[in-house]
Image 1 (cartoon, protein in one colour):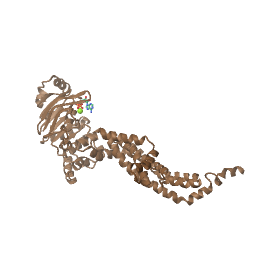
Image 2 (cartoon, chains in turn yellow, purple):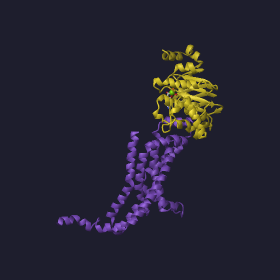
Image 3 (cartoon, chains in turn red, brown):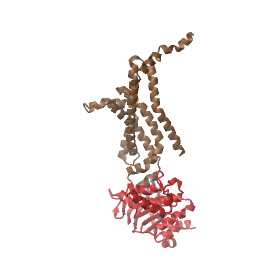
Image 4 (cartoon, each protein chain N blue to C red):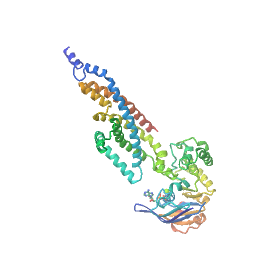
Amino acid sequence: MIELVGVNKHFGLHHVLKDINLDVPSGQKLVIIGPSGSGKSTLIRCINMLEKPSSGTVTVDGIEVTAHRAPIAKVRQQVAMVFQSFNLYPHKTVLENVTLAPIVVSGVSREEATESGLRYLERVGLSEKADKYPAQLSGGQQQRVAIARALNMHPKIMLFDEPTSALDPEMIQEVLEVIIGLAQSGITMLVVTHEMGFAKEAADRVIFMDDGMILEDGTPEHFFENPQNDRTKLFLSKILR
Amino acid sequence: MTELLERIGFLQQGPFSVPRWEALFASMDLLWDGALVTLLVASLGLALALALGTIIGVMSASQWKIPRALARAYVEFYQNTPLLIQVFMIFNAIPILFTGMFIPVITIGILGVGMYHGAYIAEVVRAGIQSIGRGQLEAAISQGFGYIGAMRYIIIPQAMRVVLPPLTNQAVSLIKNTSVLAVIAGGDLMYAGDAFAGRYGHYGPTYIVVGLLYFVMCFPLARLARRLESRSKVA
Ligand SMILES: Nc1ncnc2c1ncn2[C@@H]1O[C@H](COP(=O)(O)OP(=O)(O)O)[C@@H](O)[C@H]1O
Ligand SMILES: [Mg+2]
């Protein structure tokens, strides 16, 4: 479903991704763990080309998005992203947030987009907030709306970039539960997170990144119980203290 | 007594004397016509300035080098040369460049203030776009919006709040700047006043009334700008 081959990313002199090779089969729930600044965000942002790799190829659902004149906008409709800071559209109501792109970008009819949008809002437990504005919601509610907005594109792939890192502790669980619920579906998911409990529960694969490289790659059991790399062990010892 | 007479002497003679006022009030139709032309030039000029300013502002906030360079060149050129010279050039150069091409003076006025204030509005629009957090554009792009679509549906509606007060100020100075048309016999309020006053030297009363008419057109907009400004600060 997603294939990165020899991907490098430089920001000026800063070498942020170092020869990344990664193959994510359809339906996989991949959790990406690693210290801050290790290149996790950059990695998943290369998949929907919010960042353009300096070299290497990225292929998404059979389309090489790094190719010249690739149909990136088309691919982006299949690859939904949930951001750490929600990035809801503050001038639109919750329902409009969820229906805007399906209507304007994908050309779905308003009725259809509204119907499915309300269904997804229901699924994240917020259908009664449909007419509110983002600023009227708590952080946890906003992130759940952002997830509904992503779902209403009917994506094949969902990218989560630390979806709970900006939340007050008491709101983390409500968002994680929604994401865990999604993990039951056939959708391909890549989740950058520091929530180890989530990784254990929902992931079927965990990769550990440090300094722009993938240092550990395996099942959650492997990762938590039998990590091979010294830096992984160090990281885990700090975080699981 | 003589002192009093001397004091009110200005009513009998000099630039503000009563006969001059009477002459002006008998010819107010000229000024009304001029004011209508000014309003016409100002409103169409503003429409042009808004259209140009939005397009050029969006270009100069973009990531693409060539549109950005073009936008910069436009803005720098129009902001750093006097409007008077720009209008004079449109008036005199176009018939030479395109032989025989005739442009009505009113159109020249609309083009003149429209392009000039388009440059200023472009800067206002650019600043407004840049005041919106990067995450908004990224969210839109990640959903498949193109740059223009993201601007139209997501960035510009939010930037509106920031941009409205300075835009209203631009409208005020655009109205005043339509008075450059007077130098090319534009038929606008300034020209009508000038032409009438010049004939008999009735400058005093005429300039007072013309100034007042500009004030009446501009003041409500200036008030509106202030109101919008305080509102956008509260929100
Ligand atoms: N747009 C950018 N310009 C310059 N440097 C960047 C940019 N984005 C990220 N970086 C740098 O790249 C490195 C990796 O960043 P990131 O992928 O965000 O790490 P992570 O998500 O793992 O915390 C960091 O050192 C960061 O400062
Ligand atoms: Mg990050």
